Image 1 (cartoon, helix red, strand yellow):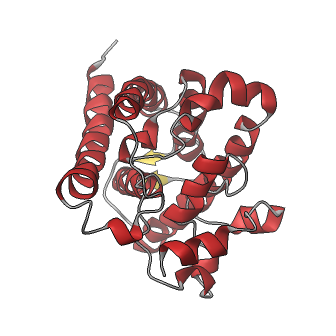
Image 2 (cartoon, one colour; image 1 turned 135 degrees about the vertical axis):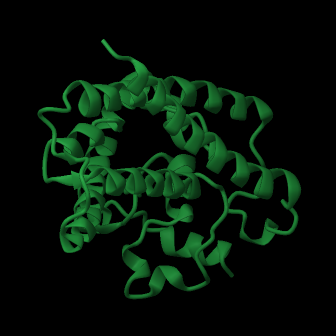
Length: 246
């Protein structure tokens, strides 16, 4: 069996994580924390041991992500819907991003809600929630079982609608960028964004930071669509956002 695709997946996944989380950490936590202090969601900083813990669990998660990708994309290549040829229809190429976005946003919300069931929370999801004040390194800090469930988006994409390999790669890059932002600890969206027609549906760093700090509500990934439909947006979300972006 050829394990080269597995090593390639590890390099790509870990490379994205360490580069993006590392750059964000250096900029916001080492070089310019005072310059960005005004938009810091929780004014205190995590302890160094929290960073080490998050990186440790993130490494385990990335190994499991790579394994899921290897099985879904390489081992089961004859059966998946990943297109490796030239792009023939740019309309469907663009549409695949919308599909992946909706699919991942929906999948994450319900898996996340599942993780907050008492038994699973205490035995599994609590690892991620040990970072009550998250940092960029928290992005992939999951219990191994949760990491396997999180990686379920890979076969969901690979075995549903046809997706071009470059679109899949770009989307995976987008998801870690937004994941790092969600755990950044700083609010990058502008003042009043949460009340705009579009912004009220977008998941922000503030929303996800509240979830880490208070454990309940704001379960979404990219959007607050499911949170608003299911009534799980925290009542104090807008107030907190306005305090951070005053």
